[in-house]
Amino acid sequence: MTGVPARVFIARLAGIAVFDPAGDQVGRVRDVVVALRLGTRPPRVLGLVVEVTPRRPVFLPITRVTVIEADAIVFDGRLNVRRFQQRESETLVIAEMLDRTVRLSETDEPVSVVDVAMEPTRTRDWLLLKVAVRRVRGRGRTRGLRRQGETFVVDWDAVHGFSAVEHGQGAAGLIAAFERMKPADLAGVVHELPEKRRTEVAVALDDARLADVLEELPPDDQVDILGRLQVERAADVLEAMDPDDAADLLGELPTEQRERLLTLMEPQDAAPVRRLLTYAEDTAGGLMTTVPVVVPPDATVAEALARIRNPDLNPALAAQVYVCRPPSATPTGRYLGTVHFQRLLREPPRTLVSGIVDSELDPLRPTVSLEAVATYLAAYNLVAGAVVDEDGHLLGAVTIDDVLDHLLPEDWRETVMDATAEVVADPEEEALRGARDRAGAPERT
Image (tube, rainbow, N blue to C red; front, side, top):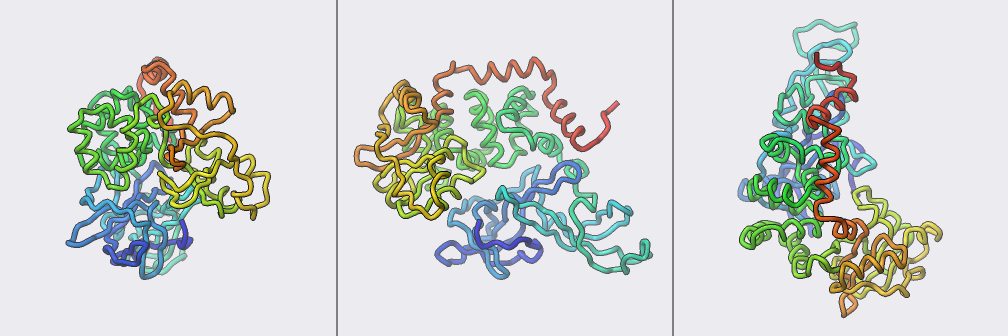
């Protein structure tokens, strides 16, 4: 994310104009959405509530914000215009946290929240790390440190009264307990939950987290959970999934339901999914992802390395960059070749990728079979391979994890999850126990 300050006090964002990349104003900030977490762990910022014409609140993920200035916010141009509806696990900072009475952890003195500050992390997340508070008038001075009514800033963990458990947000405590789990492990827990609890958890998870979990679940579970969501929410979650995983899931649905969800998705998100659905499931075209790392020939090694450092990238996708002429979105301009990350590490940062591109390895065609793709990756010791059409345009990339997913027995996910369930009799209690251990809380007796 570029053009962002090191710290942003959220109350100051209220009413700020929001612009698209072309400089056109699309609305104004109404609030900021966060997910509270257990204990003193700072909340994670999910996004902004932006009011667009005519007075419609919509959700703008924080990952799409590129610039935050004193009088303007700029985003990448992608905005879902469906009306924002707050979920059980979400908290609105301006509406629900400001003016709230909390207590200083050291003295237990009540203070009123004046503002809350968010800061970016190295992983591109934003967290609430500072709280501006005012001492409640009418109380004497505590240890003579500050005057009545004085405003001062403290760390998030210096106050209490904000935690998910204290808010009593239904499934929020369970969601917080799950937070550090890898998606595959969380999917195993969700798989074993009772039907009602599974639905509660799915509804409470934010779109990106639920998308990650769905990608790791067996097809039957995916279809069941997606069918229990409101159709607009289901479309949002599909947008957050990798296009190839979304296509696989939609391929399990009846034609009418599939088309309705595709129609509700944003056009730029639905387009690659529709392309993937035109290929047979057991071909390179059906296996590929449409969002590999693509760089132009005049990009430098430093720029290419910066792209693959993205922590959101699948490790197999981060193992190489594909050099193509513009446009960089698939289908790209002419595909020129691949540069593997080990070669990038050996070259000076200012070297152009066009000078080190591997153009001798023939790419895959979208119609080649699953067996041919597996043989190709094994023969050349690759974790991913480019998929290029007859006109030389890069369509996507096939990764080794997708190949293994289709080569293993259809029920391999259920087998792994059932084996885990034999060890963990109650997955919900086990998750909560782990959260209590991390927080240093005593076991219930």
